[in-house]
Image (cartoon, rainbow, N blue to C red; front, side, top):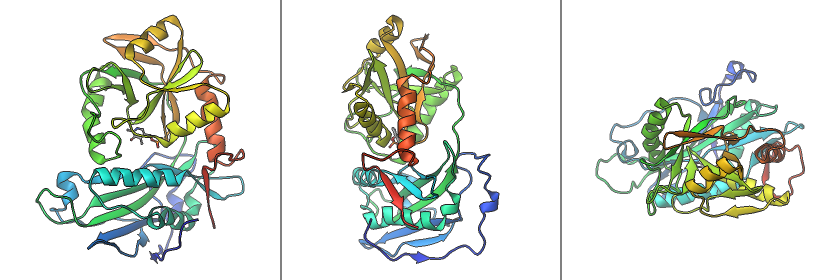
Length: 356
Ligand SMILES: *Cc1c(COP(=O)(O)O)cnc(C)c1O
């Protein structure tokens, strides 16, 4: 439970829920009836407003448009069998948001606004949280600098917002991923650990080149030697090596994923050995060839786990064994989904029930 806070609420006169077909969801294109807008002005958070979802006008000199002080989070809400709305580990996202804010020199967002705002919105738009395996409501808290000023300096004013969009089943064949050895996502001392907008802009071009070569996505390597795996696309990366779950240790260049952490804890609870350490490209490529590396997968809120079909390295494709229900990634995915959707008892304290 968060401290209660007053929100200035304006509800829609007519819901747009009839536009929503739970059996035909396209990610990120349809938004719920309401959104939250909270402004930070003169060092103070103003009363957050809940408004009908819609366009917002902005001044062309808005600082965030020019110098990119912009951060976001990605989370999901689910409905359990009793139609209660559940969030998954929202405090971890709130804390990570403020870590991103600190690195980008932005205002800290209080829990009452971040989590309290999510709860308030979820109560109003509960009808938009879809039921059913693999369905959820995607939650997107974000913040931009809002000074109208072209000088390069930290903005004095910020706008925090939350928008929400139904997310459906993620149909996809296991991707072929390319080990990137020229471009980098993050360097030590940089902003790789922050969920800041620019990280995603800079990843588009190398991803496009990989797509032109027939790969779905990239496996990022370290900026200095291009020898060690870091992340995959916008997910953390995990390996099954000799039956153990192995994943790069978090650092300033790796985003500390909530899914990554949850999968580690679930694996440990299943008695699987977990190693957080450096993982070299050489270890994985030779391990695929000699059969010690049996699974490689991305881990993130959107898909939970995304097992890879093959890894491309220096022009050669190394094919991974097909995933079955017995694969560790399948078991971990099921275990995490069962906790997130309230199907099994939450022994970790991860599930946050939104009171109606
Ligand atoms: C969001 C994100 C992840 C995954 O984080 P989760 O909390 O598991 O969703 C991993 N890497 C990057 C670069 C990300 O932006």
